[in-house]
Length: 401
Length: 100
Image 1 (cartoon, rainbow over the protein chains, first blue to last red):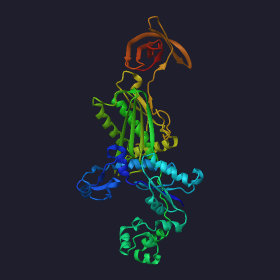
Image 2: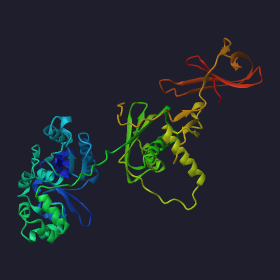
Image 3: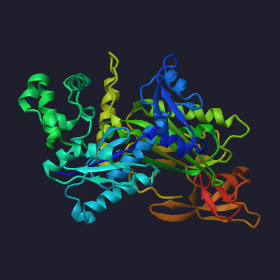
Image 4: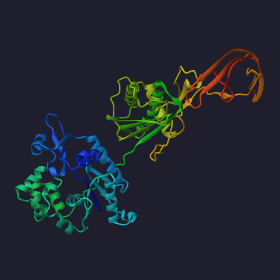
């Protein structure tokens, strides 16, 4: 197996510098945690402040540093962009933690023309998102990580496939890098086994006697043996639906109805694949070609169109009251994109279920899945007061809730 | 608008307006009053005489848009005893049948 480890050090710091150039070249401390006890999440590389340090202590070391609260959603989103780009290269990418990913590259040489080209593509994939990544390639997951730790940005390290060479490479590295519990690492230091080379010369039985299963695993790793399999991520899916009004709508009721119809369809798609949506991006295109975009990240992933509709309409009702409302012209077209699809959430059902409605929902779901749209329509009031007769009612797809 | 390659394939419009105007053949007098309206009987289009014009009203809407809506509606009592509503599109001159 050949694995490339992609390691983006100081990812939060790099995100903040990319967002605001005023932090470039400055000492920056990013904190998170409770307001009463904030701790450092990341800091400028030259600050030499470790993650997890109490903010008070970090500020006492660097009183001149700019201090900002972490925008975890931004860091996660930027990291996901990187993971998506890596998935364009290989379908086996493990998103270990934010800033660390493992890419299985064996079997891809024929496709890309060699391992060097693949590493170059991986490097390009991170640099196009304006990140400086360290890349290490090795036969095993852990050893690729060790190589990435030693690599410099834009200077990947590729280890040979021989165990002995891998063993020699990691020998001077500290045992703290081993993926073991801190108790086991502390015990190694107590025995003056500070580097992987120190550990490699021990007998496997001695390590097993002291550390149990961790001892065996540590011995394998420091001797260049890593049988850990990658746990590849599934490429994130999105559901996109579009609704084109037969005429530009200017009334709130018609817009609300259109959005509800669209969300019903989109969430029916989410339910069909047994997922919940974590994010919703809605875009209204108006008759003057202007666009209004609304993005919402749900506190908890949902599969409820009703909930999403409530969120959107609350926002629209608020903005249309302002003088600078971005929705100034009739709306012609709406798009919705549901993303961050995760496992379906279960809800406690009522004790007295409405069986008839449940049966209808089931039938509709089955028909929709079979025909890719609901064949059953319902008449809905769109603008019942309109002077133009064809705008008063419309037929809409009846979808399961 | 830029097309999204990851777009979920979807079928048809979900929003189908009801009571759309249906084109109809109408003979009118020089002053624009309908004289006869073609009605379909046994699959054939047969002109039916207008017995009486019960009501006339105009609709002028969306004048602020590029294509405004300007219609003159007639509620007609037909020679067959049936009541029919037709309108003339004042922009194009075409006749349509539509329940109001």
